[in-house]
Image: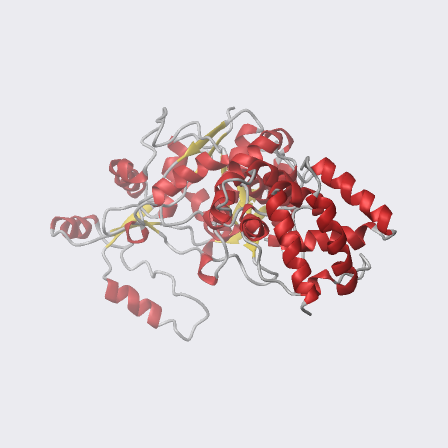
Length: 483
């Protein structure tokens, strides 16, 4: 049997982390077993539809490499793949259930349904529908239909016994049928409910594995009863625990938690985000933490999924992102960094590729670039306290002495490159009889004006050039002399 999974998002806005994780696991379940990954757009909830959200779905899947085998944009054997374009079939299937005695017409008004809720305000939970319309005769039903009265179609739930289903993550789950409400299948506007359309579409598209959040566990008995009513085989269920902000709160855009798009804008690499999200609820068979998407396809196994909620740790993602940056091909990294470098550095004489080489092993995100390189463009105002460094054994007095010794030596240097600068300064250290840091720290500080920099004295001097380097060392001397 071919494994077929589907990602069925609603176009209601941004792609949040939980949605992307669901898509990733569906993709990996299919691809790890040579199956098909399907994209279906579920747009039947017109009230929540957001203009442009469908394009966000396409763009995100393309960026992350989660290439679907069938979908609205590429077609397939079981289309259309947009629910609103499948509208003609849902009512027919609902009427089939009515004929089988598994569903019924309900003509109750909003006012009557609201009264059911209010009558239960002091009770334990939301009032179940009281099956007021279940006993309508065929003549009464036809009379109401002929009169054009608004109606919904409800599923007729069993009232005795239990319903049991198996979930890959949570195991066997049993519910009392008496707890199940007669859920609406077709709404008064002619649109199917989410649950009903899901079952119809999953069956017709031959979906074998349904992956979704654990919040749908309570709805699954209703799904299974629909499959039974139609005489269809139910899919394999894979319910995923929530992705949490902390031990008590789920991730939520409303509370400022980041979406996939937010993370990309903040300088996180798409590959690192996908890698990290894969680990939010799945454990590999070994201790490997860094995976390409292709490696995930080979390593992923459904048995590695956990039932425990996962906490989204931005520090762990940041570390992982830094590892990805360090391990990138330098040319590839430069292509990613170039636009940010050009925005931060206006001087056209500076070699941005050399600056990128210094940055690559020191970055955590791409958005760290501007704050780390602006000193190349313009020397910032800085305090002489920067020259004091306990580990380097420097004081302001030692720094002044070292800069005064370095300036004339560097002025006489005819061949200005990193190697000659290195040799010259190291020779000066020997001449002065001081420790390396007592010369190199003051020079580095004078060149950058920053407490940290993506390179030492030699690298910075070589990139800044002779004229600018000597100018900045002179500024450092004047600052220290004027204390």
